[in-house]
Amino acid sequence: MSIEQKIRGFVEEESKKPTSKYGYEPFEFHFVFVVKYAKKLAKELGADEEIVAIAGWLHDIGSIVYGRKDHHITGAKIAVEKLTALGYPADKIELVEKCILHHRGSRHDERKTLEEKIIAEADAMSAFDNIPGVFKAAFVYEHNTQGEAKESVRNKLKNKFNQLYFKNSKKIIKPKYKAAMLLLE
Image (cartoon, rainbow, N blue to C red; front, side, top):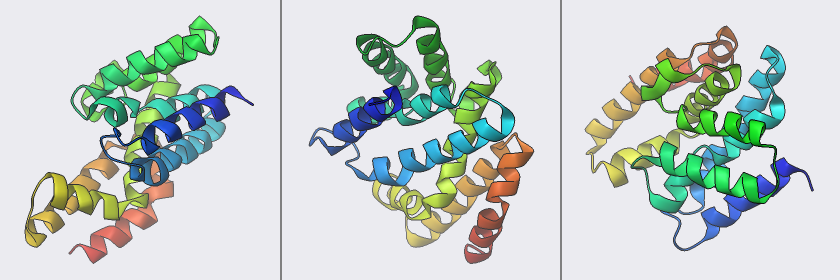
C-alpha cells in the first residue's frame, strides 16, 4: 500500500468517527476534489504529485479532529505525527506541513513552494464541486435566511474564483463559476 493510500485511509477513518466535527461529508465532497485538482495541477505545472496528494488528503484533518479554529495548525501537527509514524522522509514531511500551514486564504503571502500554492488552489477550486456544501454551511453553521445564504454563497464563490492564481485553475473552474453565478443572480 502506498503512502498516499495509507493517508487517504487514515483521513477517511477519522471522518467516519462519531467524534468527527463535520461527519463523513467533507471526505467525499471536499477532500476527494481537493486531491483530484491538486494532482491535476501538479502534473500540469511540474510539482511533486505525491506531496500534493498527501497534503490534499491532510490539509483539513485539523477541522475533522478539532474543528475549524486554527485547523491549519492542528492539521499540520497531526500530519507531522502521522507521517513520522509511517516513516515518511523528514524533508518531505516538512513540505507537506508547509502546504497545510499555508493553505488558508489568509496565508497567501507565506506560500513559497509550488506545492503550497497548488494545495491552496485546489482547496478553493473544490468549492465549485460542492455548492450544496457551501449552502449547508450558510444555513446550518452561519444560520442565514434563504436570501442571506444565496448572497453568502455567491460572494464565497466569487472570492474563491478571484483567489485562483494559476491560469490553469481559472480555465478549469471558469465554466462552473459562470454557471453558479448565473444560477445565483
